[in-house]
Length: 315
Image 1 (cartoon, rainbow, N blue to C red):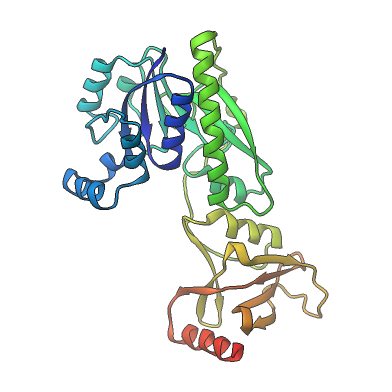
Image 2: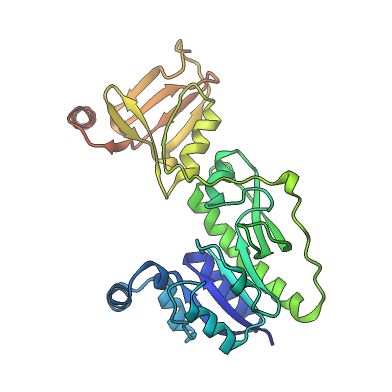
């Protein structure tokens, strides 16, 4: 039975735990993001008043917590030496892991990266995959080395990107696939010899910026605009101007339409829809993008008047 330490945050972290339990491996320690993100007093208050999903999950399975604020800390290294894990699994962790740590476990430190490496290295690949119009993403379980997301690949599995996916919905499906991937990998590590596959650097792409505020450019195609709106949700927002004001579209209430109107200039407003608090606008590919349920991006006097007038017309 493999002994495993799991380090991470959020849904990826809990699914790595679930996959490890599915594989009947022993979880000898966990390090959750709350310990890195909050000081001890704030964390204790949160744990008692508004416990995070991570904390609740750990408690439900009675998993031993490692008391450290960094994966590179002396406290974490001391815990690893004492627990002597075969492998450390990492998911959704922002720190670069030092060589002093990733060389400690017998089988190494394995990161769960939510893309098909070497494509889309870097933070938040869910966003980048949708933004760039990909129809396939995935999960990569790879060895950690000196650089971000560059280590040899041990296991990969694809995840289809659906036409109406947001960053949020793609993430939810991907972390579930990660659970199954971890289960399969840990079983293989216990039974077989796995040959790590070196990543092909010529195919690598890396995106460091999250671009969590994006102004829409209606000179672009309707598909590009729609992809930006979906990709950024729920971490940030897209927006556009109406006069001197800023409005933000709802990714679940945005539609691409054929243009059967007399308007053909990009950014032309074809229709204002008071009943849906919406607008229809011409895009660079001469298609229309229809917004419903528009919300204020930045509050201003003119925006309030605009939305107030729409609501009056609805009555």
